[in-house]
Image 1: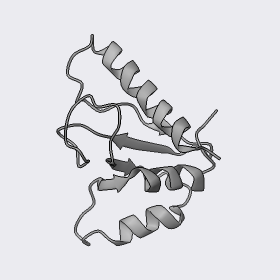
Image 2: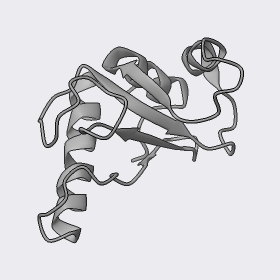
Image 3: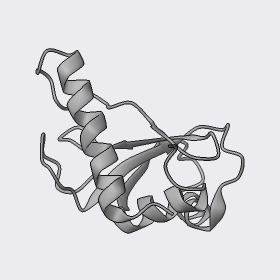
Amino acid sequence: MTNMNELQQALADKRASSILKRGGINTQMPISAIELADGSRLSVQASSSHYCHPREDSLKQYDSFEVWCWESFPFLGDTLKKLVDARHEDDDGPLGWVSAEDVLAIVNEHGGLSK
């Protein structure tokens, strides 16, 4: 199982890698997806242009995130299903303001972070 510290470190590593690839500019650009143990990918974003809290750039910690999963997810799992079901039926975009705890639950429902 992945714990909150491991998830935060993975997100920080992805953000640092993304910033370095862009020459240290435009930090609100999306970071690459997190690879999960079951082979699925989860996009977890936070910046002034994402549905997160706080909506600021380059913070080390956020309370909630914008989350996107691809249809290739082998299954939704309880947490992701709850979040998807709570959306308006016409909304097929990313999930907004997903708590860090729910992100961690989604990660663990899919076997944790890929090693």
